[in-house]
Length: 219
Image (cartoon, rainbow, N blue to C red; front, side):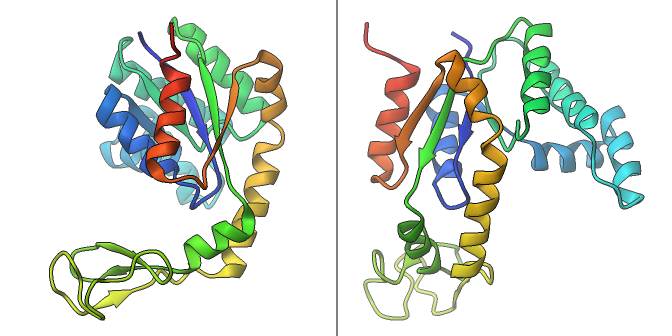
């Protein structure tokens, strides 16, 4: 069965981790508008050429271009491929456009899954993380320190780094932006009865199990 889902959640909620699992376990494809835009520009597709001209002029890419980008990508994937929308839609107009894009291709939106997070806990999760500068292995000040101080468990490297935007002010700003962007679209999907809210602060496996229960209900 082909599935079309939207995965919602602020930065740090674990969307990327869960989307990767869905790709591995169900053969789904994550459609991130930012990634698709860069790929289309690089490939020189008709929409990519149009988008590049707009960006080169210093303007924002319009909803029409983003919609065209999604339609173009869905056509490339084919009708049997299940997809995860990430970062789109963000407005009521985009939600309406997505309905048309899917309908034109014999698809429909099946589920909207929101990963709920507690802001203070998310700040703790994000501001404490760091990684090995050599192999990229992830660590955390509180939850996952290297077994040997200053030595990567994976490669034995000693160079660790933190992302400059992993600070409290940035995290709280992102949370506010997320609430502002999702506020217009959630009531639309709530009215259709297709929204499921999952505890994004639970362990990764539990979050995955909760999403699996939505996608493959018993019976």
